[in-house]
Length: 266
Image 1: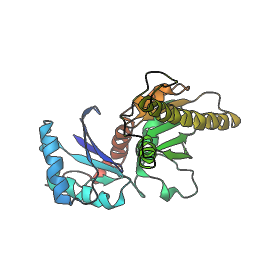
Image 2: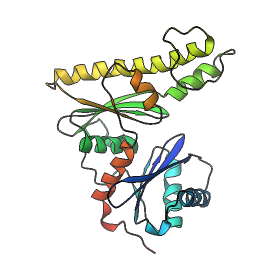
Image 3: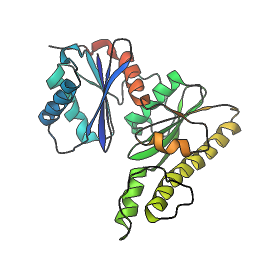
């Protein structure tokens, strides 16, 4: 079994992947900058055991992190509970993904992982939407190269800005409104957040597909992942495939490409 760990600014997702490549467990915990490796180890051990995971079966681990202070903490925590030296997605590892941006060393690990999975599972060119703390829209071209993208404020960040910057607007659940033209404050906020996010994504997609057409592409795939993708993307006007496990799939592919010296040491 492989542990695939995705650490974002808000949550850390832990996926357990069996020998057939099937994701058998997905767990979430808070991304907390202040926890030590021993605290993370204790929390991870408890969460895994509560889900019936036998720690002795874990033969490898791979980590994608956009929170640099937590990367080494999580690597140490994995070592404590499994004896495994986790592979950290970053410079110098094999991905099979040519990165065609101005400074390839600046690309975030999660963008690499989702692009690797998109290249494997979806027709190219592929546009990838990842809705986390930030929303990213990125492109793998028809030759399987990562060519760039766009970064938008995440839906949660937009909601936080709206409620913190106004005196009368309450915090609300991020769900679609009952009707498009809303008739009370809470429903108006839902309409603005949901349709505003969907409209922003549609606007980026319009420009990206225009750019792809200009370079000779007539067809492409669009795939979305991340916590709110299932809420926002059905409100978009493009044909978008939802794949909530895209990043974990990419981490498994990356681990497989680098598995040579990643066996358990105890």
